[in-house]
Length: 161
Image 1 (cartoon, helix red, strand yellow):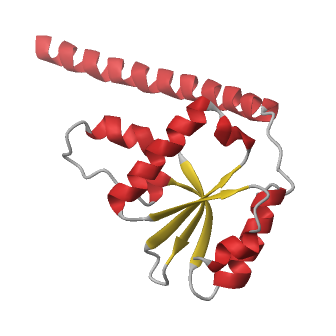
Image 2: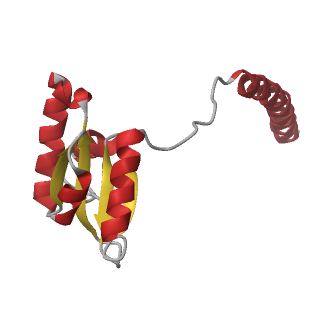
């Protein structure tokens, strides 16, 4: 008899928990819809600023047959930290949110050249440290790294690739 009451108690408790999860779940969906309506996002007119677009056009014109050209690629998308590495999370986090402006890959999609378009922001001390770090990452993994200054003759620069 006691076992029957215990079993009924568990069934009742499971039912209450299920019912509460449904009630709480519905409230969260409503809140989420309200939150979505308040989002301040909007679509940009273009993916590039003027200098990025000019360099992309030149890369495509001169190198489009030789390389696959990708833009604004996260470093973590083409550089990995092998699982089991000492301090795995530390090294992965150091490259997680960083990106390269242009990534040239061979026709098998192997990264060959990383190109950073340097504007005024690259003069900032924090940015200089960041740029030196990513340069060392590219050297470590064997990807050629090129820095192009805004205002350079992109046509001339691209010929050297």
